[in-house]
Length: 355
Image (tube, rainbow, N blue to C red; front, side):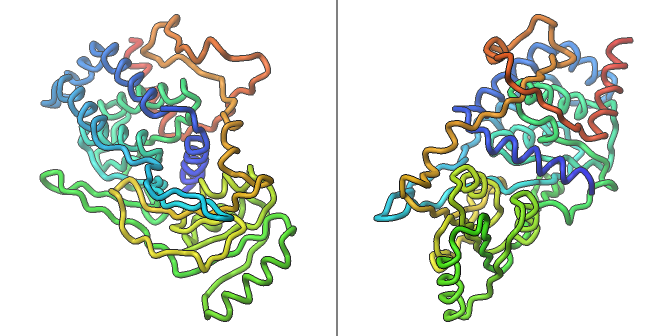
């Protein structure tokens, strides 16, 4: 499924952006856009013949917004003699939710933004001119204003969704009962030699693993290619050997595994089967505390330079966020390939309201 590459990239953009209180600020803005567009939303409710009200939409958003947020929360993060380590709730990845209920669509969009997962809604009653589609536009155009990829949220026809490509499948059954299917992690361990500067350390590690009869694989290659390979493999544990703190931070953040280490032995892996909820799994991280590779100090320099922020189609032309007033001339614009389903939905909604 081609869309999975767009989802992977959207996940990367969102999870590498550590702007303070980002999800809360995004959601408050989205709620303001929903309220500002009450008239348009009511029109769509009327033509769709649905029995829900605008208050139902507001309450669905509010209910999801008030749910506990566990993103990267922990009480076990600590510094040892030579290493930092901790166990964190982290986003599951690309989640597909099978539902035609617009209130559930809203709840999962909010939950996805809070947890930094990508959310794809799979609909058996897919319609480009629908209330769900209108909610998608309001949400995604708001995301773009905060430099988050529009591909973070999608709506697709059921028959076009290849469920095997997703990290988690959620099917909403009768009476809103959820059937959650999360891909299992493999039993494999992986050593990633990123820059060839730790040959002796890797040789020693491989000897230790062989002595313990642990199934492992050593790999090399370009970071992006290896990342894609690992996230398809979903290993039980993986350790990267690198002297680059930028690479180390991105690796810890983006690799899907319950144990992700930097220059550390895989013998430190733990069994972390318990899940916080449907949006998270638990990940143990470990990395050296030496000054030359202090990953904790890194992320501060990372902020996406994505400043091609378009006004959403329902907003006034002079409606700008405070963030837009601080854009410098040398910041790069986002060149984003938006998924084709969104393009069709956007054009259909725009043409309807411009009649």
